[in-house]
Image 1 (cartoon, protein in one colour):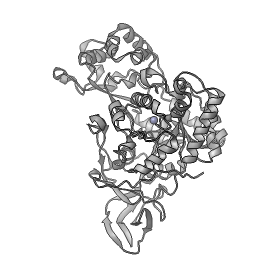
Image 2: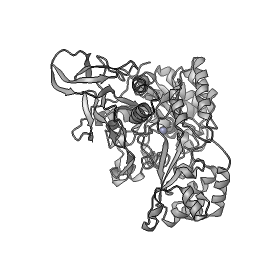
Image 3: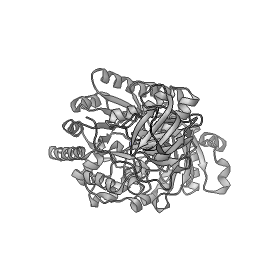
Image 4: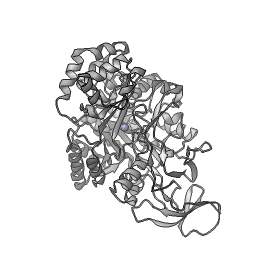
Amino acid sequence: MHDFIIDNATIYDGSGAAPRRGSVAIKGDRIAEVGEVKGEARERIDAKGLALMPGIIDTHTHYDAQITWDPFASPSPSLGVTTVIMGNCGFTIAPCRPADRDLVMRNLTHVEGMSLDALRTGTDWDFESFPQYLDMLERKGVGPNAAVFVGHSSVRTWVMRDGATKRTATDDEIAQMRGIVKEAMQAGAIGFSTTRSGQHNGEAGVPMPSRLADEKELMALSTALKDAGHGVLMMTKDSKATTMSSIEAIARASGRPYVVAALLHSNETPEATFEDLDAIGQARGRGGKLYGAVSPCPLNFEFTMHEPYVFEGLAAWRPVMEAKEADVPRILASKELRDNVKKELAVRARRMFNGHWHQMFVAQTAKPENRHMEARSVQDLAAQAGKHPFDFALDLALEENLDTLFTATLLNSDDDAVGRMMLDPNSMISLSDAGAHLTFLCDAGFGLHLLGYWVRERKLMPLQEAIRRITSEAAQIFGIKERGSIKPGMHADLLLFDPQTVGRQRAQRVFDLPAGASRLTTPAIGVHGVWVNGSKVADQGGIRKDAVKAGKVLRDFAS
Ligand SMILES: [Zn+2]
C-alpha cells in the first residue's frame, strides 16, 4: 500500500528530458513508482493541469542562525525549496566559543543584514564545535533538508580570536584551522566556504576574518577537502583582489568542485561577468571543476540610512561605517563625505552601487508631509529640488531621523545580459542569499522566478531545462545523494505547481522575526504542494500549520 499517489501530473523528472503525463506513487520517504502506477494508496491527488518536479535545491542560503529558531527556514519551503545549503561565503555560526557569540551575531547583523535583536533573542547556541552544530540541528529537527558548509570566518575566529580580523595566520594557526576543516568534513560538512569580497565587512567596517587570509592559508584549508574525499569549495570573490587563476590553482590542488560567486551583472562593467565565465570555461578545459554562480533575480535592495549596506563597497563611505551611531548624522551632513563619495562614484568601477540615481527610489517616508515623494526616483526628486541626488537622499534621510526607506536596483538589471549568463554552460543558477539581507530583499523564490518570468514570459529555455538546472544539476555538483530527480527509489522531495501561473509576488514586509523584527518576503504564486521526504510541508497557503519537521540534515555526500 502506497501512502499517496499523485495522478494525471505532467512529470518533469529533473533530467532535462521532455515531460510525460502519468502518476507518481510515494511510500514512506521515497518515490515508489513513476508513470503507470500499480497498487493502491491511502490518498490520491488529482494533479490535472499541473506539473510535478523534484523539489528545488537552493545552493546559496544563510539560514545558519535562523534555522535554530525556525526549523522550516521560512519562507523557502513555501517557494518550492526542499533542500537548503547553508553557511555560504564563510559565514557559519559554527564553530564558535561562548565568548565569541556576541561578536559573531554583531558581524552577521552587519554583513548579512540580520536583526541583532532577532539573533540575540532567537539563536540557539547549544553547540561549540561544527560537529556539535550538526548534531544539534539533527536533534531539533529541520523542515527542509539542510546541508552546511564549514565557514572560513568562523574557523579563523575560533583559532585566532582577536587576530582573525587583523593579520595573516602563522603556520601553526594554519595547521590548527586545517584540522578543524578536516574534522568538520568528516562530521558531514558539504564543503568549505570563504569570501574575499570587499563588500563583506563586519561591525564597524572591520573586514570579515577570511578576507585577511593569504594564498597559503586558502590553499591549506581548501586542500583539506582532498583528504576528506568529498565536498565543494565555495568562494565569493572580490572583483579586484581575486584572480581566476588563483582559484583554478586551488581547485586543481584540492581536486574538488569549486563554486565561484557572486557573478552579478553590472552595467558599469558589462563584460566582467562574461570574462569570469570564459575564464571558468578555460579552467574547465584544463580539467578544473569550476562553476560560476549566477542569479535569475535583479538585485533589488530596500534600505534606510541606519543600515546603508549598499554604499559600503565605497572607500569614501568608511567614515560612516567606522562612526559610532550617535555621530552618523553629523558625518552624513558633512560636505567632506559627500564630496568624497561623489568623486569616487565619478570613476567607473565594478561595485554594488554606481550612482544610478534613476534606479534608486524613495519607497516609504517617515513624515506624512513627505509622502508625495514615495515611489519616485531620487534622480527626479533631486532635479526638482535643484540638488545633487546624493545630497537630496542624505538630506531627506537626515530630516526623517534616517527612517526614510529607499529601494535601489543595483545589479542584474539588464535582462539580456542576465539571460545570457544563465545560458552560459559554465554557470550554475543560484545566489538566492535566502536567510540573509532580510531587511533589504528576498530572493528565496529564485526558482519560481526562473520558471515563471524567465521560462514562461521570456522563453529563455525550455521548462525541463530550467528545472534540471535547479534540481539534478545542483544535486550532482554538490554530491547530494538520491535527490533532485523523480525516479523510483529517490527521496520524495517534490513540487507540484501550475506552469501557467507560477512565480512570486512582490516583496512584502512582515514582522515575524524574534523580538518583532521585520523581514521582506515574496509569497508564492501557483504552488499547489511541496513535499519533503514524502511529507507535505507547504501548499497554496504557504508553509502548513501542521507541517512536521521531515527534513534531513545531509551529512553523507558522493565523492
Ligand atoms: Zn552569501
